[in-house]
Image 1 (spheres, chains in turn green, blue):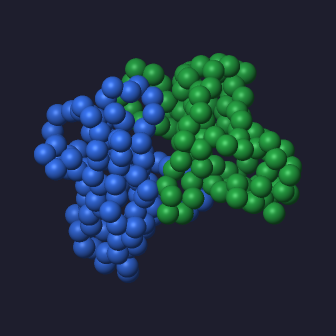
Image 2 (image 1 turned 120 degrees about the horizontal axis):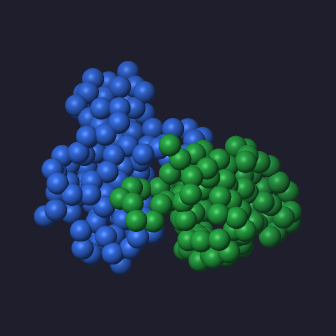
Image 3 (image 1 turned 120 degrees about the vertical axis):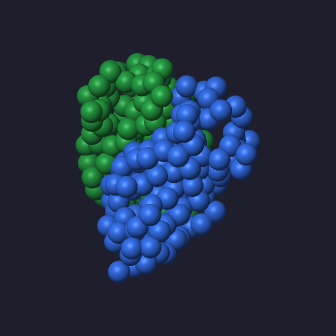
Length: 113
Length: 114
């Protein structure tokens, strides 16, 4: 089974801090995704990557950036954290050419104070 | 625009009764359909999928879903609910012409009452 690991389950950061959320997968999946989840809004796509050093904006990229230097690792960066970025962040992976859905990590609940 | 709708924010069912969580979609072509479940403070877990074939698909934990092409629906069902089924359920659609992004519904919170 694919395992998707998010480095932190809970994180508390101060406004203005630069925040790194890490996601690592142990299979050879090309596609990786970052979502945020908020009550009543469901999952909203922030960024995704279909290959090393490749990235594409999702639906809500403002205030975020990403890095994919190695195939197994996809990092989400909050350049200057704000309170409206308090949320649950979910990483997911997907293997191109398969008929399956995503495999998700356990999520990181980020609180910005 | 392509979309997935879960018309109920919450569903409450007594333990032992059948449950249904509704999902309708609007995408072109023949989509792939999924249900995921999320327990508190956890990621999403795959429950079941429909790609082609029999309209009734069976998944994990005794859940099943019925694909109805004419009504563009993919409702999640279980014959007898358990308290442990209480969770947040997401319907998702992968448009058949896109090999990457999946569209998620906003989720339905299922409460099973003892």
